[in-house]
Amino acid sequence: MNTGIVIKNMNGYFYVQAEDGQVHECKVRGRLKQGRYSLLVGDRVTFDPAGTIEKILPRHNELKRPHVANLDQVILVVAAHEPDINELLLNKLIVMIEHADIPLVLCINKCDLQDDSTATLAAVYRQIGYTVILTSTRTGEGLSTLTEQLHHKVSAFAGPSGVGKSSLLNAIEPSFAFQTGSVSDKIKRGRHTTRHASLYSLDGDSFIMDTPGFSAIDFSDISEERLPSLYPEFLAAEGDCKFSPCYHEHEPVCGVKEALATGQISAGRYESYLVIREEIRSQRKW
Image (cartoon, rainbow, N blue to C red; front, side, top):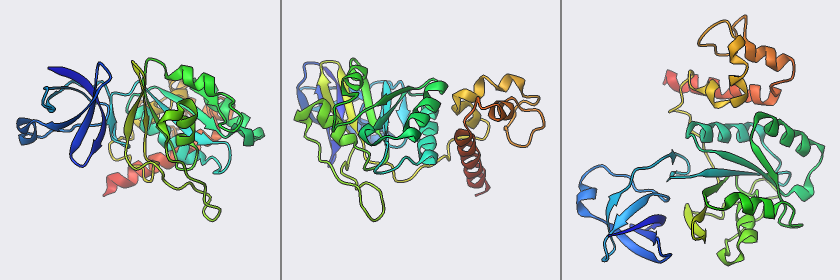
């Protein structure tokens, strides 16, 4: 029996890269189909010489959107400009990744277009504790640092369309030859060039995943009680909250609001928390 990792799912076939680097076109065993099963890109599986997947090995994590499994980290890519950073969208994506309990690296691409606002934003997320890497495929800045971050890991590249995810991957490994797109002058957003999540082998034990751009975000599986824990900078301040749980909004004695007032918590991050909390409350009403 062989063991491998699912690198692509297309037209009912699962493409599995074995430990020797060979890729096998596989189908799922009938008995697996008879039960409720979910087989995702990133899953580790066993399969027989005929290309039949016999067993899905246990996962250590799962990201809902894009729906992939067993990630060591997510490289969340935004652009310094073209398109401009949407901070609310950025924070929504971070909340989703935090909820999946997957380590996060923030990559600010197109840093050749950066201005003072880019440095300010990078400082906010570094202060929280995130790794922030500034890159440019035009100048080559930061590419070696990003490449080092990928070694010995399964990494997903995610983020809005048009920020240069595919261009970054091509710069890291030109043989991947990902299709790239431009940013629409009319709507200032990127066009989708990645249609399916796929896993690519960078070396023997390093894989990278290119994913479709996010088009919708669903917080239906996140509770109001869970949300504050997805903001790491809130945790240090919650010890000064009078009430437990504290939702950090209308409570009279709140360590998070005190930290906000003294500049220890970013106003933009706190505002995104309120927006997401309201979305969660609205979803519960339905």
